[in-house]
Length: 254
Length: 71
Image 1: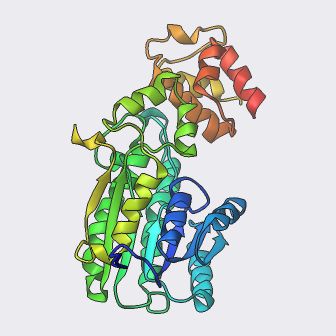
Image 2 (image 1 turned 30 degrees about the vertical axis):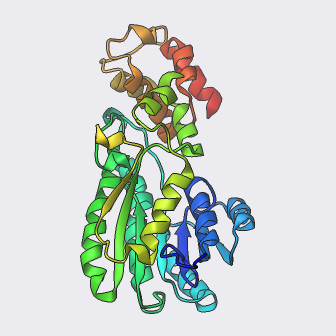
Image 3 (image 1 turned 180 degrees about the vertical axis):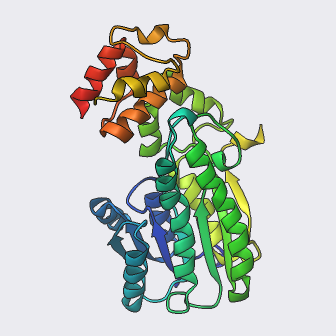
């Protein structure tokens, strides 16, 4: 036996958003099993506590609204003082928006961009600050969507908010390389989460079957995304930055 | 609610609608129009509708009653 494990996250402090459910919860549990100490953010305080109860390492929860940038910065900086400076960030929180063109408004687009896009930029800014970043090798992982890469109807606000993350990933990768902070993005296909269930009520019974057929490997599980996040946060990915990694069961291979 | 007939007319892509108009008879009646109605109800009236509820409403009047019941 050997203790060789380049995917180990032992000793790393990692901030995860959207940690109260779905992909965020699965990521929290897996990263904790890989040895990371976790600072978990979500609006849903009860969900956060349920996630913390399933973590295998130190995990601290902060219930807050990611779109309140002032409060976000104050709370993260304040918590880092006692928790310890951060080595990694996984920004998983996001909101779907199934609204066709004829009903779309600037108000809807702005709300979605605040949650899906602007919060990612704000978090990257906070994470890379000397008060927060631990130094050494840092890694930021953003979560977009296959719909930031390919089109679908009734998805313009969501798709543009996620495609914007791809541009942000590449610009941030260049800007933060001098600080040794890598920035990558995962574009997931459809994962069986509450978010998918919520979308299903907007369509007829065929919806989930239709979506499933678009994935040669079938629908994903939250853990499928979590393992990819763990890899990009680990030192095994130390030469990867500015990449968009499709984790989609073959959705975009067609 | 006073503007809802105009809002529905815009989504149904006609100049005006009446309460007894059948939803399925509108030329643009499809899954995207249903989604647009769900978005209208959510954005303007804070009413959460499902696809099935909108289809089952059958008429413009039925749809308005449905939205009112969810407000």
